[in-house]
Image (cartoon, rainbow, N blue to C red; front, top):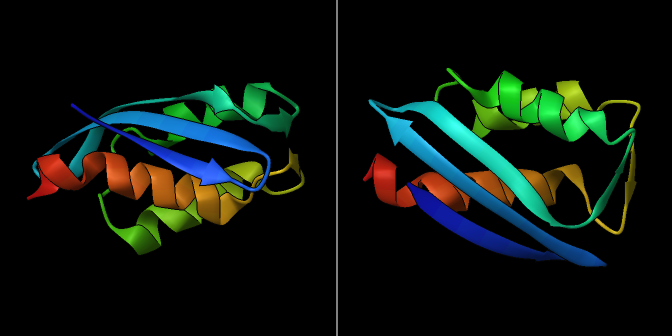
Length: 92
């Protein structure tokens, strides 16, 4: 299980993930950031499970789930960066 922290404009995004066979098996997103509504973070975690560990695939899931949400001090790209960084060790 890998962990990565990405410093966003106003906060920190911490992602722990496990990638098995090129697919995200588990993911946890925590940190000092604000997403409104808050339950979108849990929805994002659930939606990422069984997603192929590929930047394009992950980016598509992040954009779909967070569409219409308010991101304060962070961006969708910050989430993608943290997710990809967290799984790099498992994917190698």
